Image 1 (cartoon, rainbow over the protein chains, first blue to last red):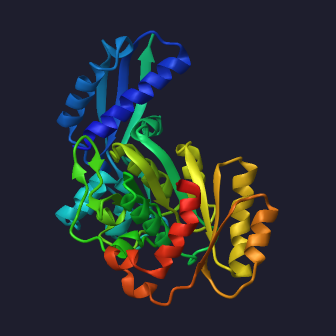
Image 2 (cartoon, each protein chain N blue to C red):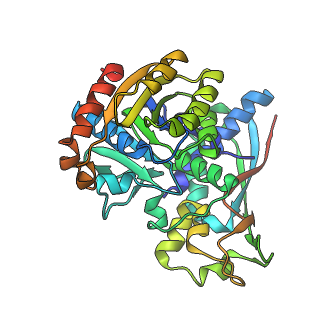
Length: 136
Length: 241
């Protein structure tokens, strides 16, 4: 249920943007959910909607667009690329859950499937980010 | 856009003081001083949290003898209580395996921990730092505005040479600096004290090398009875009580 904490950060960032850009209302927030973090879409959306009710006038009529972002990891040694789907097959339940809490834990529990290096990059699909905020 | 930065102040809004235990040099006893300080403050009746940000060599969990606990999930992560201290460390997720992070990954881990950890109300949050003035130090300065630094050195000129660089950065950036502790003090040299006072920084005192300290690692009751703790209390009560 740490989806709530991340949802809260989205709304807090939206409020900050509204202040900075002098927006009276925020109409739409587009959010990317990176595959690596394995966020429960339904819980996250529910949390966003529930929290938005307590955020005051600016977020009263906000719409959320939530898009899934596929992951891509790339080995810095052999340049092989792979996805979390592929990585998941080698992980235990506890290891996958640890990555859910902190995506960088992938560097602890996973290796490049081609050369076994721990030195790889998360190219995309890490976690929760804001793609755009629209307001007036 | 990065949403996590904006929630950090809210997560720490009910934390009265954030004490960052840091050093320019490794192996000077930051983790022991962090754990010892947390235990002492808790005994004094304070609400205390301890965050281990040393990802490459976490050791607070070894010092406190942390076993079979995990943060509780409730709209974030609530740190487990260890000897009365709210304790958070990456070891809960690494299962004590090596964490080979690059710089940007370290920032992401710090951001994630700060964004999802629900500390609640605390009098003190103690942060056990890794050595140096790299990513973790810069991120703490960037993300935790109410940080107060407590710097640790040994009597060694080699150690102090590295520690001095941290002191220069903290002074230059006008970061609140509680003072410098000289740990594992041997001999009667006043080199460190003279250097620190010469920089107009508070010298909090020396803690003599305690040959029996190692036997108390992992047992907080034994740790509390060590000479190390008795001397630590003298140093820290000067600034906290």
